[in-house]
Length: 374
Image 1 (cartoon, one colour):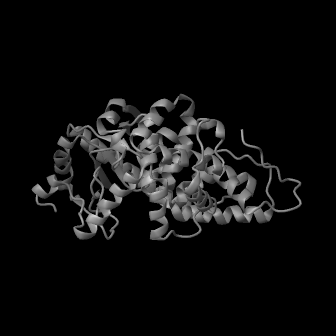
Image 2 (spheres, one colour):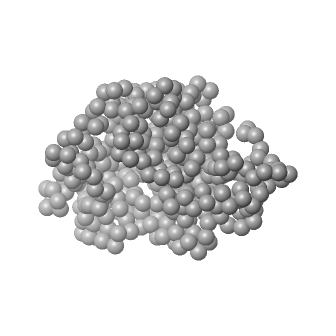
Image 3 (cartoon, rainbow, N blue to C red):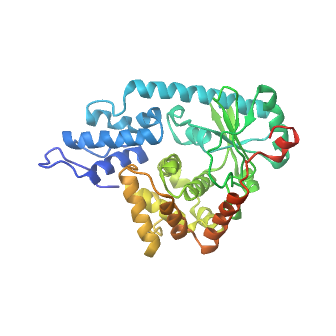
């Protein structure tokens, strides 16, 4: 267990690192490990909480930080903003459940990835965690049928974040969004982009999928080991910047809640085959540096060393500050290079970007083009 923070009789305010540790330990574990905090430290925690809110949502941040309310003498996040955010999450959740029901009733076989599924598997209060897109893994042969289900309802492809190199994923397509913008469906044919399918392919996810009962029905989702690997792949792809924060928190909460039952041999073997072993160590070492109890990760985990170690230490500093600044393109490219499992991994992924500069892809599936939806 991590050492308790006892500052009831402290003469000096906690350091910024200690305030960050208090915040992150609460976010990652759902527990507060402090007796008291002085007013300057409480103000520092609130400042970091505002940064956290800016990177996720007020509702989810309030839910994650609710255990700090007694310690700080009041809510960490503005209650009105949190309530409005949770209402949006509730609307999004209802719309996503309806979309899943339409797929199932049409005879399709969706497996829910990330957000909605992780929210219900990992969190006691799932609704605030429901953010953004509905990611579903379908057999390639069912993509056309899925398009046919939603096109009469006004769904269209588009609204992906634009980059100079276009849409480069080989695992999914640009979002399939409803006319009101409430529901964005990411149709996947692989659990995530290359190189994850080298170690965890779509058929592997389907073979290990579990049934999850939620308030409004039943969904299929990956087993816990595969949840961790899919989160890891997304985190490595986003190069450990703030965009992957929800996945990192999901991994930490998964370890807290279900870690004792995880098959680490499978996780490590699949990560190695997917060229993600170095990012796996970097992620688990990051979480423990932020306050996750070390007993929840394998004893063999080591923080990266050498050039990768310098990159990792910068990542830890960014997370401890709750992303005080933005990274440059050069910073992100350096993370790609130093945390890649092999130089070939770095070269292949960035070659796709180079090709995209010449001929950007729009990410619309061929089945949609055949139906005149491009």
